[in-house]
Amino acid sequence: MTTPQQHQYTHPALAAADPELAALVGAEERLQAATLRLIPSENYVSAAVLEASGTVLQNKYSEGYPGRRYYEGQQNIDQVETLAVERAKAVFGVDHANVQPYSGSPANLAVYLAFAEPGDTVMGMALPMGGHLTHGWGVSATGKWFRGVQYGVRQDTGLIDFDEVRELALKERPKVIFCGGTALPRTIDFAAFGEIAREAGAVLVADVAHIAGLIAGGAHPSPVPHVDVISTTTHKTLRGPRGAMLMSREEHAKALDKAVFPGLQGGPHNQTTAAIAVALREASLPSFRDYAHAVVANAKALADALLARGFDLVSGGTDNHLILMDLTPKQVPGKIAAKALDRAGIVVNYNTVPYDPRKPFDPSGIRIGTPSLTSRGLATEHMDQVAEWIDRGVAAAGAGDEQALAAVRAEVADLLTAFPAPGLPV
Ligand SMILES: Cc1ncc(COP(=O)(O)O)c(C=O)c1O
Image (cartoon, rainbow, N blue to C red):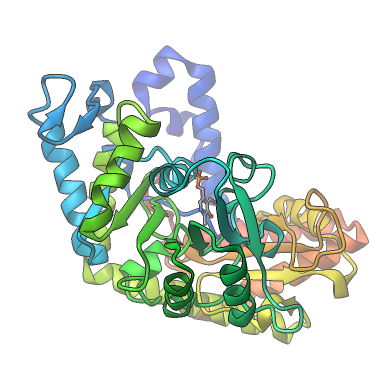
């Protein structure tokens, strides 16, 4: 472990100008180094992605698109954005890519703007079933400004029932259907959604925010050619900066571009665009295929080790990077478990499980995933140890045993010293 003083030298200008803020950055670096980060939507970006996102590209305004800007001085910025676009097209095998959305939620809002009018019916997976807020859930603008109808998973299997999805789509005739979500441990059947959307005359959007890196690395089937639009964040399994992309066939390019700018946003965040370009270059390398497959192998090994310890996993396991644990049989609520695990150096989030009898702010489950630990180089042989720590942490949460949590925390930090995280000062 490094000292606070050593960390300040990694940001010398910041430390000199604002020691209070520099100290917080240093503290976050140490936290990310010493904890086992299992939140499936998080990752460690490479030092190269980190550097690109902290460049003078941040100083430039560039409303519009390459070659069609409303500001001058775009000699370099146009090339940066074109690089990002071309790399996205190559990595995902699409005709068109827009790399300007500020994040996943604005990207999805742009999709609505492109293909629906306020009041139109839209369809997505319900939030408590694993969908995202922006898939038409009531508290989101997408559920207030559109009429959101929602599908879920079956209670007995934890899997999507395509007969039910089809029936709902044909009855409600939504303009837009979203597939994908935030807490889905199983492979998304894009072909089945594609058939339903075509039958219902809907625009089909695959929101692959969680699994974009797995798709790029060939560890999850691609939504191409089954869907009309692909929406993704760039900061989860894809290991890029916090940002988003919209991709499509050529026929939807104009509508999507117009919706992002000038429909919804002003100037793109060029430093983020640059970092997206770097992440996409990294995602095109053979080593990224290994990474994506290792993420899935680790998640399957971790799921098996948890099942062996009597944990209840939604859908019985995982096909991807994510595991949704229902802690009801352990008689420990998700929030209490998540907070105790945090004290044990294991960072997860509490999460509703399908048909959860508890409230979203105090649900029955926790959601974990393997993208970050795989970025540090942990492999399948470490997953039994990770499961054991989770088991001890959950048991200690139930028993209120702070000593046991402290013991796990020390063991976690000890193992992680051998697996330095990308992008963090050593
Ligand atoms: C499936 C999905 N779509 C969209 C988003 C929204 O992304 P952001 O938080 O960048 O707005 C998320 C974020 O968790 C997500 O999981």
